Image 1 (cartoon, rainbow, N blue to C red):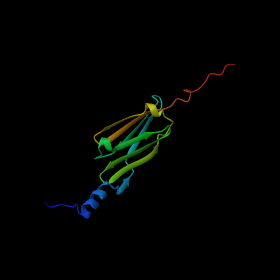
Image 2 (image 1 turned 30 degrees about the vertical axis):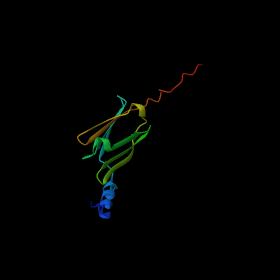
Image 3 (image 1 turned 135 degrees about the vertical axis):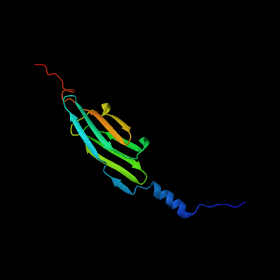
Image 4 (image 1 turned 90 degrees about the horizontal axis):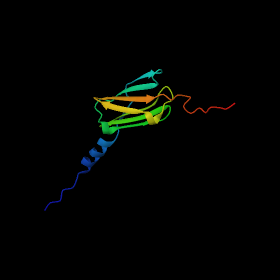
Length: 115
């Protein structure tokens, strides 16, 4: 019985497929609806699978990475206002990621001072 060994070139190609060769800042638009206390950010991620998107929200900015083959969309972007990370939602359809964040009311944590 013959033993087949993987050629180094084949193994090298598989490693290169997983390696990020291009890092790109995605196209984005932001709408701030102050009366509704909502920030909506649309991010164009054509050809990216939902499971390849990573999104983290902090009170003033978000971190996004999304892989498509050897290309990675990457952004560290400000929301433009302080938000409530726990109330942030995201929806991804047809290459468009829509992030909705609730603007933090500065009086949410205010304490009444007795006179």
